[in-house]
Length: 566
Image (tube, rainbow, N blue to C red; front, top):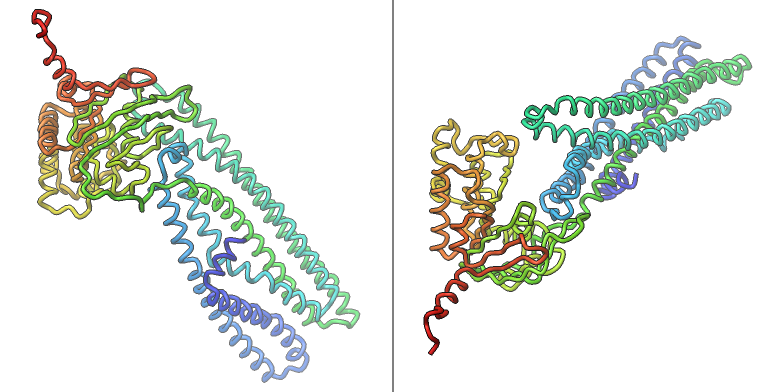
């Protein structure tokens, strides 16, 4: 409810207009019972057609005004939500795009999917119909008061029915909250297993995992179906209770009212009018409780979204260095994943001069890709610093730093966009000549020439449907689109055929000539022989840092055993 009031407070004039429209709508709703009372008491009693014509004309005018005010109110209430709904979407999606991977990576993908879907739940929980029903609730006093004017005892019966309906609605909201929590948790688990089965389709077939998955899914579906049945039964019971209350209210109004009519303290028209008024008061309260349930569900999701967006974000307003040439200094760097028994590495110290070739090596799981992600600023070190141009990369503006690094990941993924948009992702202003050059250098031209749409071909499923070699070439073109001073290549020879390896060698040679700082994850002995620095993460816990060329020069300057030292 606080969120709804906050949205209204953002537009005080609109809120005033909506409240004014609600007042007119509810006052005009009195026209129907007044019309019935007057027709039965005056026209039926006296039979004067002029009275009937006057009453009917007035009722039609009141109905037309009520309709007009209702349309205006819905439009105004919808306008209230435009800004908050857009801000909510932008905030959540902005957090998804900018949250630090060290925290975002701990959130299960299925949970993220559930939260993204929750945006629509929040928007539905505060839509125009909900706002209108909430603002109508105070006017139940108007209908109860009108009923009291006709018969105090019928007004008391109406108040009792409203109290029962509010209590039933509140209990239904509490049950619904618990069931929604169960459904949400089970759905997250089910979505995670389903996504795993889809991404590992080959594994399921090649290793006979169908039976195992069938058992897992069947168990989960049984749980979900049971929760759904419980939710349906709970909702049906709640609806049945409200219908029973409405029926009992009508019975009691007519039973008690009939005695008053017989006793002469109430007219027949007054009895029917009181029935209409009491039904309207109960309908307003029932509609409010239904909206209250939607608000409660939206509030739950809103709380989860607010917790999600509180994650630390990458800085977009940090330092931007002028004339950066590619120097990187690593000081006492250490990193460990949460929950691990020890660090991947620690105490790493190395000074990378502009134009140096650095090869990172080590066994599987030694932390090579983790070190690359640290250098990119995707995750934060447990201790130590990575300095670029003498500034800690955590203090740099993340978009600026990413434009300094030509990054080729080991397992590239892409956005569901065109090939052109994926290549130009970090350099959207790239001109056609450079784009064509990048495509040619990356060896992607031959593939594009065989495609009907060429650069406008759509990449689907994050590029999973593309052949491995094409994915690597597309990732290479994306890396080359950035004219940075640093190149980070994670296993650059992996996934390429002979032609691709030849192209990769030419690219590395051209980067060497251009004095680019190159950081390469590889076990390739040829690259190690050309390296200025080798970081061996296989040595635990402190990696070995080797300087092959300096060591070779030092060895060449040492006298041989057969030479005498002068």
